[in-house]
Amino acid sequence: MRTLPVGQALVRAGVITLEQAADAAAAQRAVGGQIGQHLILAGAVTRRDMYAALATQWRAPIIDLLADPPDPALVTGEPHEVVARGWVLCSLEDDVAVVATSVPPTGERLLNMRQATGATTIVLRTATDWDVFQCVADVRRRQLLDAPEPPVDLVGAPRPSGADRLVRRLVVPALLVVVVATGLVRAPWWTLAGLLVVVEVLLVAGTLLRLALGWRAARARASRATGDDGATRRRRDGDLPVYSVLVPCRAATAGLLTLVDDLDAQDYPLSKLEVLLLVAEDAPDVLAALKSSRPPAYMTILRVPAGPASSDAFACNYGLAFARGAFVVAYRSGDSPDGGQLAAAVDAFMTSRRRGGPGESRDRVACVQTTTVHDAPTTLAGRVSALERAAWFGDVLPTADAWGIPTPLGRSSEHFDTHELRAVGAWDPDDRSAGADLATRLRAARRRVATIPSTTTTRPPADLSEWADERTRWITGCLLTTWAGLRGSGDARRVPAGLAGLAGSAMLVTSPLGFTALPLALTSVALLALLDRSPGLAAVSYTLLTLSPKSRD
Image (cartoon, rainbow, N blue to C red):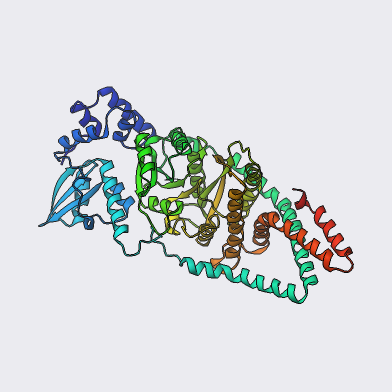
C-alpha cells in the first residue's frame, strides 16, 4: 500500500495549511519525533481530526478501541513494546486478521503484521495513538485484576519474598542485641565501656575518613564541571532519546499541578517527552482533577489497579511497563526539577557509554542521582533536614560516586537507564529503607550510580514526626546497603575490594551513625558515671567525645 507522508496527507485533506506542515517538518528536523505529534503539540490539529483524515488516506475506517475493545487474549507482549509498535490485533479468524493501527501502514509494517499474527490477509482499521495506549492499559489492568494473586513485581525480574529478605536482614541485628543484652546482665560496666569506645571510634573515624576521601570528591566534581562539549553539540543536533517521566498522583494538590507546569518548562523537546500520570483506580477525585486541568498532549493519565502494595513503588513499576523512553525518572507531587535536568541526565548516561567503549557494559552508569533541596524550610524539622541534605548531596554522594560505593536510592528524582532498571527488577514495594535494595541490585549487576550537579526542589518535612520517619528510612538504607555490599565475594561483591572499598563503606556507615551514636554515647557516659566507683574514666570518655570533630558538626 502506498501511503503519503502524514503532513502531505493532512494538507491534501484540508486539515492543516502548508505553513503549518512546513513548521512541523522544521521542528521534526530540529528535534526529531513524529510530525503528527508536532502538529498536535503546536495546536494545528486535534488528535481526533488528524486520525479521521488519515483514516481516509489509509483506506482504513476509524475504530474506537474503548467502545469496541479487542479480545484481551490477542493483545500479547510487553505493554511498552505494543504501544511503541503502534498497532493492536483486534480479531483473528479464518486466516484474516483485523488490525487497528495508529501508524502509517507501510509495506514493511504490513509484512510485520502478517508475521506477528500468522495471517495472510490484513484488514486495517485506524485508531488514535491514545486509543492504542488506553486499550493496552485496559488489557493489562484486567490481566492483573483477574489474576488470583496480583503480583507486586510488574517487570518480571525474580526477587526473594519480603519475608525472606526480612529474616536475612534481622539475623545480624538480632545477634548483636542478644550479645549486648547478655553483656549488660553479666558485666554492665565493661559492656557500657565497650559501647562507648566503639561509638567514639565510629565518630572520629567517620570524620577522618570523610576528610581523607574529600579530595577525591572534589576531583570528581571538577571533572564533571569541565566535561567535553559533545553533549551540547548532540543536543543541538536534536539527537536526544525519548524520556519517560513517571508521576505517582496520590492527591490532587497544588504541588502536583506545579510539577506538571515544571515538566512543561523542561529544556527538552516535548516531542521526545513521555509523561505518565499514575492515578490509583480508587482515587476518582484525583482523576477528575487531572482531567479538568487538561494536561498537555504528551502527558497521559494511566490508571493503576489496586495492588497488594498500594505505594509509589507499585505505581512506578506499573508505569514502567508502559514506558517507551530510553531513560526514565520518577517524580513525586511537590518536586520541582530544574529546567535542564533531563538533558543533563542524558549527557551523563551518554558520557558513561562513550568512555566504556562499544559493547562494554561493565560498571556502566545505570542511575543518575540529583541533589534534592527543600523549598524555604520554616520549621525546625525542615531546617534540620535541609542541613542533612546539604551534607549528604554535597559530600557523601560525590565521594561514594568517586570510589564506586553503592548508596541508598530515594523514591524520586533518580534517573535510570530503562533497560537496566527493568533488568534488575525495578523498584521494590516492600523496601522501606530508602532504596537500599535497588542500590545493591544495581551494584551486584556491576552498574554504577553517578551524580550530576542538578537540583530538584521538594517539600520539607512538616513536623518532627515526618522528619524522624524519613531519617529512620535513610539510616536503615545506609546500613543495609553497606551490609549487603560487604557480604558478597568475587564477582558478587557489591563494593570494591581492598582499602578503597573498606574506607568508602566505613564512611557510608558512619555518616548516618553520627546522628544516632551521640545520644547513645551520652547515655553510656551517664550510666558509667553511676556504675563506676571511680568516675574518672567516664569523665575522660566524655571529654574525648565532646572534642571529637563529629560532635561539633
